[in-house]
Image (cartoon, rainbow, N blue to C red; front, top):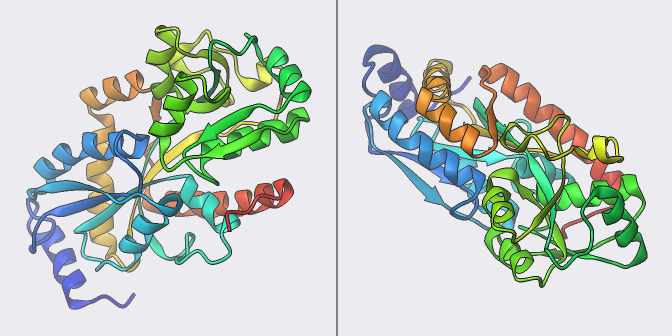
Length: 316
């Protein structure tokens, strides 16, 4: 592996000075999405722990836009010295199937560092939609086109509804937004009939009667709301889409540096305070080693090329 002099020095520092990750300033975690998203929650939860363990300030930098492509490009062009990391999600593995010219290689253009968590999504409707279960929802969606929101074309929330429609035999009207917050607000304001929300987003709105939960898009019930059925339990199989989060860096990072970061991030996931936070957010920690994460990313890119091709969805 060809490394720049700066990357080589950073790798040496990781081996010889346990309290120092990089010599040239703070570690930056780029979040390619808006504040308040799962990516952002995880990055901000992780940053203080990493800063303490690595002996460097760790700052979070939100760079939303273009379904995460703006932030991803910035990371792909950064020096591989450990000072620029990225919290990504499975929109990253969906984008290559949606965009004709993705400006990076999702499978080989980054260094896989650490897997983080999986988070469940739940289909919700606003209280004026006169259904309370998936059977009723599908019947209504077949009778008339329902408007549903998402944070953008090709996001997991978009793909979840498209896949549900494919499996259940209906077409709904997709209304893409620039980020999660405005889409959620339009469901709460009854301007949209429904959407798939992360469980951690939906929980307070369900408790307040602002939305009704229909079914969870996971293979098993979510621990945060175990009374909500899964799509399969409610009658539609093979429509599961969850939210998946992980940490990447620029390509070419030295293996000792990657190993140190992986070990530190896994320690954060195992921390008692982190575990409590994840449970409250409806997330499940799934730590793994960098090689396994790289395989997971490549497999998910291939999976979505197949699914998106069958759905016939494009973003440009």
